[in-house]
Amino acid sequence: DRTHKIAAIPADGIGPEVIGAGLEVLHALQQRSDGLRFEITQFDWGSDYYREHGKMMPEDGLAQLRKHDAIYFGAVGAPDIADHITLWGLRLPICQGFDQYANVRPTRILPGIPTPLRDRGVGDLDWVIVRENSEGEYSGHGGRAHRGLPEEVATEVAIFTRVGVTRIMRFAFRIAQSRPRKLLTVVTKSNAQRFGLVLWDEIAAEVSTEFPDVKWDKVLVDAMTVRMTLHPESLDTIVATNLHADILSDLAGALAGSLGVAPTANIDPERRFPSMFEPIHGSAFDITGKGIANPIASFWTACQMLDHLGEAEASARLMKAIETVCSAGISTPDVGGTATTREVTDAVIKAIFGSNA
Ligand code: NAD
Ligand code: MN
Image 1 (cartoon, protein in one colour):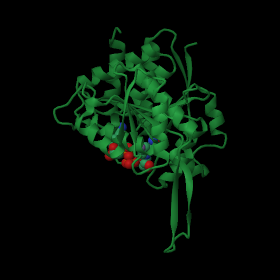
Image 2 (cartoon, helix red, strand yellow; image 1 turned 60 degrees about the vertical axis):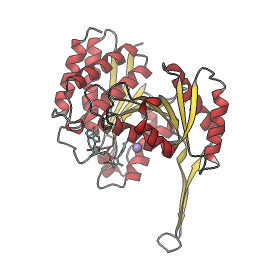
Image 3 (cartoon, helix red, strand yellow; image 1 turned 180 degrees about the vertical axis):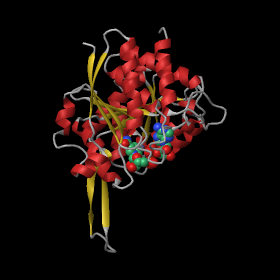
Image 4 (cartoon, helix red, strand yellow; image 1 turned 90 degrees about the vertical axis):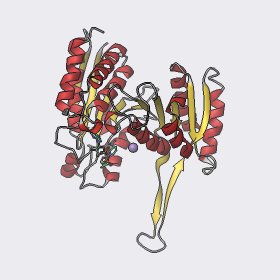
């Protein structure tokens, strides 16, 4: 069945601008491809909902989402609401409730998008960053005592389980194996973090024996920032903990041109629950309402969603349309262009209909 039920949660800031653009593009793909059909349900959850109801989504939010095949998510964050409320009130409960333990972030220099890396361009940087998305440093465990007093103490507990580390390692090795170079870099900090990250290293070595055709190496996270910047071509698939990969993928996004082109997928590889697809960037209130948000990240994550839904052909068609438009220099100010969100979206839709692929 090629009917796909999509839950769209545009949420805050530029979220509605880029998800709105993405839904138009999905509609174009549907018209272009016989049999492909999206049933879109829009949810008005987010900061406005919070101001009205005191929570970011209704109590039965997850039950409502569960009826869908995928979630297409914008961004959360508002200037007048604490970030931990918007994040823990909507995005993280979805990731954790649906055990989307694998976060996948493809990064590539697109044609026509300038990179800050000197003498590099298309083909020099082509990575997939796999982020552990369910535990580690963002487990939510910890506490505060003696609030406001001089002896105040706060703990932020990182949790690494054998099950959690093994499953993300396997997932990363599998992705590495599926790519032409079959190359995996395991990011670690086991020199300083000598419990959780030593377990991480040991499990990497164990799981590697299941994938004899994958070449792999280990790099400390601080050295990794240098390698990403100076030797981007030496990397292919990368796996890192929740915190490390969070930081590295912002760097990756910047090296590839802009956060505005960087997509991400929160995947439940076992497909028990819907997976969630979103741009990496946040709600960007500095440019909200100006009509200049870059919709490319939102389109690219739609490609990831289409792949996940088994629509490889539609995904490839959209990716090709994105590259055509980027090559033509039709881009928003964050990547040095002068086009609006509207103009980039129209150009991508035109490319979808124009291509004979
Ligand atoms: P941000 O990603 O919103 O913005 C960082 C910078 O990048 C800004 O200058 C912004 O204008 C620019 N930018 C981001 N996306 C862009 C796009 N598509 N096109 C053009 N320019 C773009 O990060 P921030 O400013 O640190 O955070 C703003 C809010 O977003 C905060 O409340 C934060 O908590 C939240 N946030 C949410 C998510 C999420 O929902 N997944 C991720 C990161 C930040
Ligand atoms: Mn982040």
